[in-house]
Image (cartoon, rainbow, N blue to C red):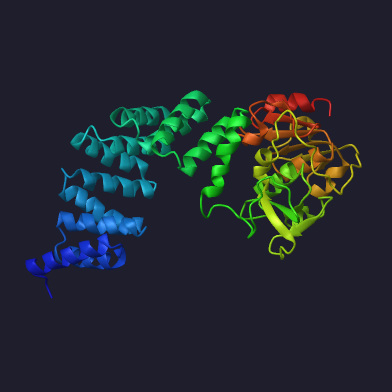
Length: 408
């Protein structure tokens, strides 16, 4: 039965009230009824698209938002919401066109400029994205998303001072924001500034739902009357990151290490599986908090964790990297399984646990790290303070790797 104008007005009021109360499912049903009755009603199309965005149904939101943008050509919100939907769908070129219409309607809108930057960045147009962020910040110099986004761009090309300045400005408005503090800490740590960076880095533990933590009090470095548990904070204890952190950081304190089956046969010390009862433990610490809790410095790190395996070197070279071996190594006996690591006279690997195991055993090891390497490595290549036998090279330095392996 067709709806009268009065019924549509009443249904629209009810839908707006439901949406304001957070009941987007009911609001979506009501707006859909209005759009069915009045398919060219721009505001109803816009509101239907908005509630579908709230419900995370981006593909379904596109059609009403696109039509709303056509029927409401001078409505800035209609253009920006359509652009936002396209961004969520990964249709960044089309989103740019919608944002361009919004800019013409409201040229001094900082949020539109910021979203333009986000879209350009998604398209790999970093210089244009930075100019868009600059534009947003010239309009509103404390716009947090633009400050954070520009900081990321600056950090990616090594402009640490500018990146930190943007984060400091953002933190003036949001001094307790854990994500901003974490990012500031990471930038400082990447430059080797542990003294200032480690405290901020602990903000990661304030972000809910992102890290594993056992049901124990968090250790703060105090003397304990009971056992201490060290644990990797990754949700998947068998992930590359968790295995690597365990080998790299389980050092310098008398504790039981929580690990998975992969490392259970490697660590020469007390271990416990995740999920086992924690009877007798009085506190726990994430491995990545140890540098702060134990006052480590990069110049004076404790020795690596003891391993149960012992080196039995042969002529083999371990190869644990995604890169293909140089041509000169093609005829050599290459070890490619972790069980073969102790037999190697040299190991080449990405920043994953097999390379860390080899280095902890004292085997000469070349670890290939990306340009945005983990802050634990610090800003410098060459001999690593973490392992006396490890040398760091960039993972794209094929010439350097070939020179290091010459004569092998």
